[in-house]
Image (cartoon, rainbow, N blue to C red; front, side, top):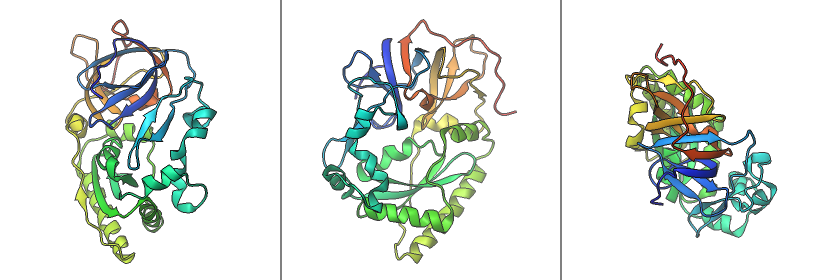
Length: 309
């Protein structure tokens, strides 16, 4: 995955991935060819969104018994329900993973993947919202890196994917924890971050309650802190001055240099004299969009307001 950010060409953007250990734009060339894992940290990203439609972001396939890998849509077809075309959706065995523990169809490759150890985790975001989630052993690190959380803790290592999902549902019911947090809510919370203490307090409270609930289920918790990647340090620092990006990243042309990345949220400088505050935006919104890359693209001029006031 040692690739460069392309300087030209048209791509279907699959969003930000942390599969290689750092944040990268996952890009599918419209002229076919392999997916490009393009680094974004410290790079200038110049692009123009082509049209207003959404395009299929392919599927996941099982690379072996314990790993999945992204596959581009062979037809680069328009997206239908769930961000995929009908053909990719029909071939995506991994789509059954979320209801694996509830019965129904289980492809052999999915059953083998789910038979490996999984982790149950808590992740807390900038506004104190805390979600519960699961990650397969090979995705233990990257799954949390891509969440965009401030603090996270692995609660327990489960024997397989079925058991861990039963635990996830049990704690959801008992503690009222959510299993999903919208990307827009994560971005807003980061923009309003003033003090880390409330998020840390919320995380500790949920951790204590989850540990107690697991004990009640005769499952001993083995809390293990997640170590946040350094690429997100500036965004986890309330003193970092920033402004919300004043344009819609899903249309028009843009030019920015990424300074920090937390999940799919980035802090970036624009093309100016250096006096403007860095901007906060979510690159995950580009998922399914066709973008044209090029150094000639720049963000339109606009006055920005600090997110701290």
